Each structure stands twice: as C-alpha cells, then as structure tokens.
Amino acid sequence: MAMRDRWFPLRNLRVANFGWIWAAPMLGHLLADMGADVVRIESERRIDMMRVSGAVIHDVPSHSWNFFSIQRSVRSVTLDMTTDQAVAMALRLFSTCDVVIENYRPGTMERWGLGYEDIRRMRPDVIMVSMSAAGQDGPLSRITTFGSSLGGLAGTDAMQGYYDNRPIPGGMPPADPYNGILAFYAILAALRHRRLTGEGQYLDISQWEALTGTIGAPILDYQMTGRIEGTRGNRDPAWAPHNVYPCQGQDRWIAIAVKTDDEWRGFRRALGNPAWARQPRFADAYRRLRNQDALDTHITAWTRRRTNREAMRLLQADGVAAAPANAVEELFDDPHFLGRQSWIELQHPCAMGPLYGMHWKLSETPGGVRRAAPLLGQDNSAVLGELLGVSDDELRQLQAKKVVF
Image (cartoon, rainbow, N blue to C red; front, side, top):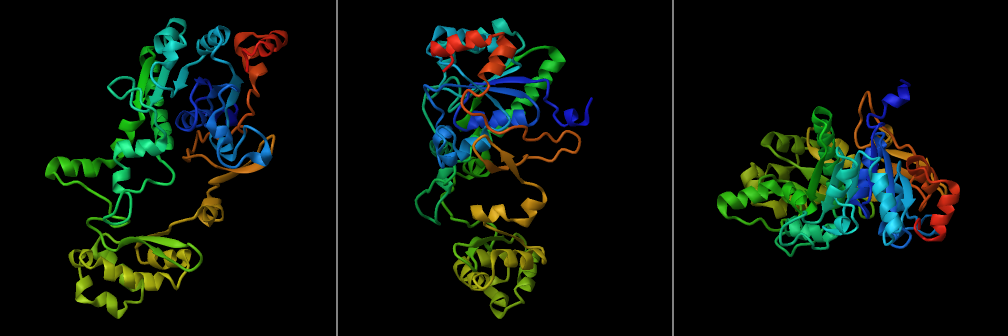
C-alpha cells in the first residue's frame, strides 16, 4: 500500500450526500477529507444557497467562497428530483453507497421513494443519516429552521447578550458545523457496528436536541435549584476577572479569565503588582466577583496601552489564561496558525484561495483536502458513467431532457 493511501482511512467508503446549506455538507467534507468518495447530489433547479451566499468567486455564478470552504474534496452530480428518471438514478446510485446523508424536512426522502426502507431493499447494510431540525418524529418534527433559529430553540441564545439585558443571538450560528462534526462521530460508530455485525442502520439526528446538549450546566442548575440563567455578557458566575477587554488598535480585544487566587497573584505579577490590585476589595474571588465593575475599569486601563498579543504574552508568562479575541483578519497572520498549517491554499477552477485545514492532526492517517469544491455538475460524466454505466450519449440525452440538470 502506498504511503499516501494510508493517509486516508476512509478511502474504501462511498457516500451519497443529499444534504444542503451547511450541516450536511460539513459532514460530507469531513468524510471526504478522510478519504471517502463523497458524491454531492444537487440541482440547478434549486441552487444550494451556500453556492451563492456571501462573496462570489470572481463573479462566477453559483460559486461563493462559503461553498469553496465547505464543499472541498467532494464530487458534484446534478439530478432534477422532480423527474421519475432522476429518482430512479438516485436510488441506483444509493445502492452503490455505504452511507447516505440528507438534511431535508422529515418525509421528503420518503415522498421521493428514497427513504431508508427504500434504500435498504437495494443495499441492506446501508447507513443512512437524517439531520433534520427537530428529529423524525414529535409534534415539531416538520418545522423549518436555520442555524440562527436553532440557537433560539436550543436555549443558547437566552444566555448570550450584555449583562442583565435582552438575549442577542450569536453572529455565526454554531448549530450547523457542530452537528456536522457530531454526525461524523455517529457515522464512525455505525461503521464500527456494521464491521462487527454486517448490519446497517438509520441515524436520526435532531439538530435542536444536539445543540441543547452544549448547555448542560445551566440545565442542571435549573433542575437542582430552579434558578434560570440569563445573560451575563462575558462574565462568569464564579471567576473574576472574566471578560473581554479593549486593546491598542482599532477594534482589538483580549479575553482574560482568572480562576483561582494563585492565578490572581500571577495576574498581579504580570501587571507589575499595582497598588489598586492590592486593595482589600480584590483580595479573593468572593470580593472580586462583587466588585467587577471597578476591577474591569482598572484592567481596561492596562490593556488599552498594549496590543492584544503583547498583553497575551505578558499574562501567559505568569500562568494567566489570556488570548486575543481575534478578528477574522488576525487569524490569517497568526503565527501559531501559520506554524501548524491551519490554513492551506487550494487552486479552484476560478481562483486560488485559502481554506481552513484539517480539524485534527493524526500521526498515521492525517487525511487531507484532496480537491477544490466542484463546479455545479462537474462530475456528472465521471460519476454516472463509473457507477451507473451511463454512456456519454445517454448523458447528453438525459441533459437534453433536464433529468441531469
């Protein structure tokens, strides 16, 4: 086996990805980066909004930088699912796949005749993953959401916002990428089960339920005490200082968290042990919590005189958890990110562009980004010919009839 082949532990896996927008495509590229042959099924009739959201690459229609990032390493096939012939082709394609992914509203795949039971008749050991908003059953199973509305449903938005003020949803909803990664782990477990038993299975992932699982402490607090956690800005109920402070430069910030009295003493050393830090009202965590406004005023006076990276170096040298609250442009020249090759450059048919790299560093099977995100239908001939035996003449006929579209 060639050394490079060993890099991709999922190289013998084939995946059909019917998902769109972010969550399911995130899952697709994770599998593809680890070696799986992931075939993205889409349609020109209903363009995936991620193809056109945000900045479009060099004004090329239907290809944005967002799409460039989350659809790397996969192949694209276009089928018009309003036609019976396209549905039949999709089912034949699924029969060649180990895993089928979708994140439509419950009932959509079944309505097309592409539900789990339909696919199982063609491929008994198939693993199918449905990543709907609220799961496949229950009174709200058919709701429509985006990541931003899932944050409201899951309770995460209720805890975000300025101290003691109304909730303010996060600017970039975490539900989509989080659920993509979570589903990746679930698929690995299902593949392990199949290897041991020969059985496939159906994975029903509720993005709402999964995101709610990220706020375990406030839920437990309510169960145990009846207390409802509200907005508290960047402050912590037990640690002080714990905030984001302005630094030198335009819109530059540093996040600082001090947990113990030992860390507080390290914080004081980093600041030169100023007189204000020795005041009795800051002597221990209990009193610092009750004097946070004054504490933050003094810390802000210190951070404003330094860049966020300079302040980080000084504080970290004394064991204080401090780090820049990086703006996007700061990430691109962060020496640590650059040193670990967290960014990579990839040639796309339309442009050369930066991408985030692998999410993990595996010593023996690191995976890697194997190809740029595909143009719409870029792989119709290769995939349909290779997997379904469609000749070039047949493909031209299917395209003329708008079955492949």
